[in-house]
Length: 184
Image (cartoon, rainbow, N blue to C red; front, top):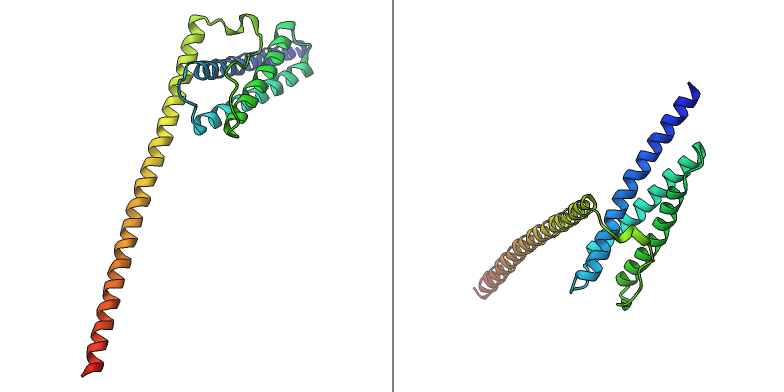
């Protein structure tokens, strides 16, 4: 019974590891695609999103891997995936942070060699497309919200300006009336 419970836990951790790894891999491929295909520099918001996602998912992968190690010795493929995750994530994080700090991008910076990692199956390309649409949608939502906030701020500023002009006009009128009263 104890062994069955142990195997169940191992299976659950392995499934969790694989799920997070696939999600991380889709984000990495999306970033690589964007950085190579985009003619314009990536926006700060998008870079921050990618930075946060890659960093968070890599940390999750490492945490689940450590939990898995406590239960049993992970297979060689799992260890290879963790090493690859750390190497590629560090590369992306350093590339994104250099860009965010305004340092010049090295166009020919070589991505880490990862063998078959970069080849894409149909389901992975669908996953990458999904991540791209999600990121674009999220970025669009953020931009839309910012535009709405800016419009609201502008409207509020206009209203304040109108009130101030009205107060100034009333004050000038009051001063004029006081001056006329003194003349009498």
